[in-house]
Image (cartoon, rainbow, N blue to C red; front, side, top):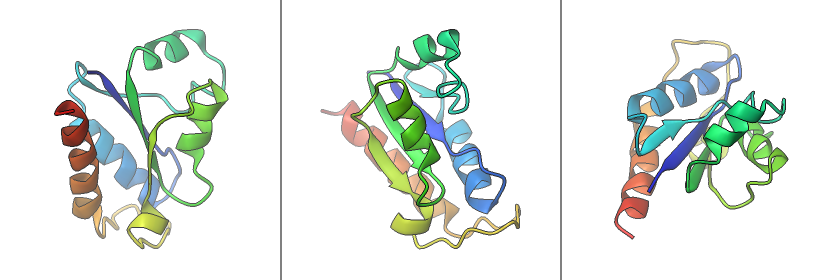
Length: 119
């Protein structure tokens, strides 16, 4: 099973954390990062690559849920959604060094991946 992780690309602490987590967990085989900006821009090669995944994790930073919206824009409506500000009570700020609770988020994403891999 191929799983795509869409990190939130915002210029803030939660964006930085989602990006780091996605890159850490990706193996570019079964676990892949997906360019969340290329999807709503309609870049066909990025859309095609993204849709090679069978399941998706939208790793959102805040309640705007840009990663989820990017998936929906290209017709992907079934995905697991995690939002750092809501699900982990992380306060969004402009301190890129603030990685408060990043380990908890990484564990949660890893658990979703493990669950899907063993279904």
